[in-house]
Amino acid sequence: MFEGFFGLAENPFNLTPDPRFLFFSDVHREALSHLQYGIEQRKGFVLITGEVGTGKTTLCRSLLATLSQKTRTALILNPSLSDVELLQTINQDFGISCSSSSRKELLDQLYDFLIDVFVQGENAVLIIDECQNLTPEVLEQIRLLSNLETEKEKLLQIIMIGQPELVKMLQSPNLRQINDRIVLRYHLWPLTRSETADYLRHRLEVSGAFRSDIFTHRALWKIYRYSGGLPRRVNAIAERSLLIAYLKGRKKITGSIVAEAQDELKGNYGSEPARKRLLVPASLIAAAVAVMAVVWPSLFSEFSDYIAPPIVATDREVPKADDGEAIIPVSPDQYVIPDYVGALEILATVADGLAGPETLNLHPEPACLKYITRPSIASVEKGYVVLVYATDDFVRVLGKERAFVEIPMKEFRSLYKWNIILTYALGSDDEYYTRGDSGPGVERIQSILAHMGYPIDPDGFYDIDTAAAVERMQEDFGLNRDGIAGEETLMLFDIIEKGMK
Image (cartoon, rainbow, N blue to C red; front, side):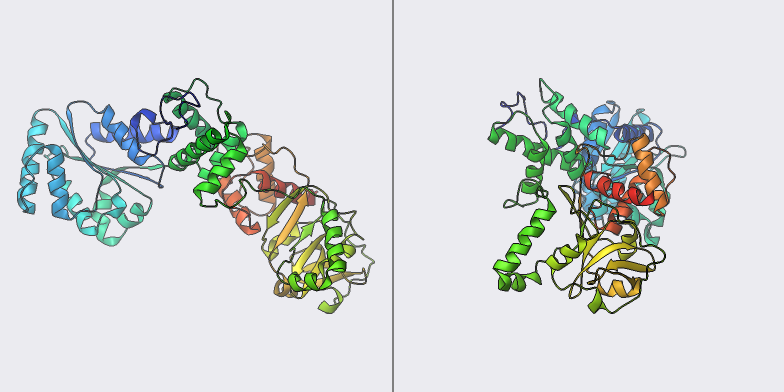
C-alpha cells in the first residue's frame, strides 16, 4: 500500500525471514563465522541462542545460501516431533528413505547415507530451529546422532538454534551428555542504537529506496527504544510507522509517528499517539486546584482520596537548616497536611514555585529519596508532607507551623505512598546514551552511578556493565527499565548530580 508513496519496490519490513535483507551486525557476522567454521572443521555440535526476534532463523537461511554444493543439508523448522518423526523428517530432507517406523532402520539408512557422503568428500549438516521446544527424549535422540562418526571425523554436523531457555534446559543433569558435546556456542545479542539505524537504512536500500533519510533522528531513537534492538520488533514498528505516515500523507517518519505506531501495536488505539508532558507551569495548576477547592468543595473532597498528586518537586535547591535551629520530632498531626492546596501553600514558603514544563513520574525506593534534594510534596497516609530532603536515617519536612520537623526514616516508610512527580526544565530532547556510545557524557553518567553505589568504573564507554547499572538505577527509582539513558533518566541524573555538589 505505502511502497509506491515512498518510492519502494517492495515492503522493506516484511516479517517473513528473507536472506536478502539480512543485516550483518558485528554480532551476526561473528555468529555466521562460528557456524561456517563448525561445519568446515566438522566440529559436530554447534549451539546458537538468542532472544525472540534477534534474527536466528534469518541467519540460518543465510548460512544455507553460503554453503557449497558439496554440503548436504537438512533443515528442521518444526521441532514438535517425536524421536521417530524427527528421524523420518531428517531422512526426508536428505532425500533418503523415510517410510519406516523403526528407529533402528531409520538410523541405519541415515548412517549409510552419511558414509557415502563422506567417501565422496562431501559434508552433511543438520540444522534444527526452535530447539527450546524439543522434549528430553528428542534431545537424547539428537545426541545419539552425534555418534555417527568415523575414527577421526564427525559424519554429521549438528547446529542447534534456540532461545536462551535452551541453555538452562541443557544444563539439567539428564541432558549433561549432550551439553558436554557442544563444541561451539554463540549468543545473538540485540542490535545497538547505531546498528538499529544502520539496519533500517539497509532494509530501505535493499527494497529500492532512493533516499535513506525517511526516518528522522528522533524516529530512529524511538524505534530503538521501543524495540530494544530486536530486529523483529524493529520491523513491526517501522512497517506500522510507514503505514501511518502514508495515511497522513507524510513523507518523513517523525518521533510522534513512531510513538503512534507503538501504541497501535500494543493495542492502545484509544490513547494519545505519544506521551504528553505538562506544558502549564505547576503554579497555575496549583491556583486552579485552589479555585476548585473554593467553588466545588464537596467535589474536591469527594475525589481527593482518589486523585492524589504524589510528589511535586521544584527546581530550586533549599539549604539545610542551620545547626542552631531546633528540630524536634513531633507526631504526624504536626506535619501531615490533610489537603494538597495547603501543602502547596507551605511549599511556597521555601520555594519560589514549581519550575520547568517537564514532568517525571517516579516511584523511588525510600532509600533513594536522599538523592532528591529539592523541596517536594509527598503523598503519605492521611494527606501530604512538604519534603525538604532525606538521609538514610531521617526525613526533614516543613510542618504546619512552618518549622522544620525531623521524622525517623522508619516512621516515614510506614507513611510513604511510594510515588513522586518531579517538574524540571529539560535540556536537549534528542540527547540520550546507550550501549556502544562513548565520551564525556557517558563518563558523567558513570560517575553519578558510582557515587550512588552502583558497581561501575567510569571509563567513558557505555558497555554492558554500564547498561546494567543504569537499568538497576531505573528500577530503584521506578522508571522504565531499558538500560538506556534517555530523556527521563538523564533528567534524574541531572537532579542527582546537583545534590552531589
